[in-house]
Length: 296
Image 1 (tube, rainbow, N blue to C red):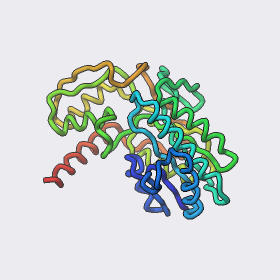
Image 2: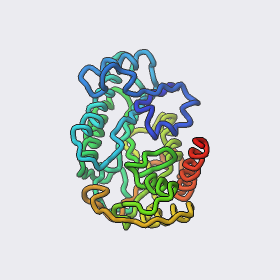
Image 3: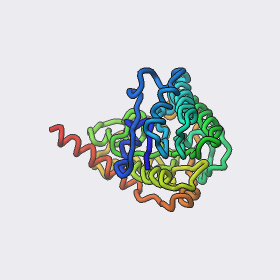
Image 4: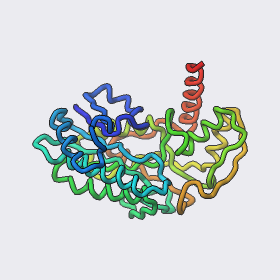
């Protein structure tokens, strides 16, 4: 099986250990002489499709930060690049059999729920969420060309994730560097967290499963209080830091509890989460320590 991954240098793709089992081509913007969001990019993309002839295409390209006030960048990256990739896949005689569009649980908006399923109404509030919703709707229009899967990941973390834009890596970095104080938003919130190694397994299953289609949440189905995650990082690292609260962090309206339903994910892939939040924290702490030892 041949898999073409747009966003091949992303945090998520870096943990696709299974890609070595398949004939996989990782694509970044450097593959093209101009930006993927520009008019005409679909022709270069289609040339790549005709040459590589992938069975499956995965679009992982996205702005990583979710709370920026940057509508233009979100529109260009989350929507226009998706449009050009979809057009490039659909326009030639050779087409992929399956297209996996990576969306986000942010499209559900600030809903208060302990079981957000794929049929939950969309209520995107932020520029990030709105452009992801636009890309979702666009991808669904191409179902006559190839099978379309839209994944909606909830929070997930792991070794190597950006420490600037994500909650858990920020905590791990503070503990590793023995910082005396860290600035966080509201930690009295319950959120669904997964390990990127589980996420990788889910994508492999969706690549290999010929029957999978439609919208699929990628989540653990478990809720974690952010404050308890802070305590677990401190306990496992042996380092305790003070917390300075900044209500502006996190952006926009925030619900107290947001937990995804992984019922459909389990039904389609047969997979359950293999890693707990404690497993993820231990792995991230060890990875940071290992990296430091190598630098020394």
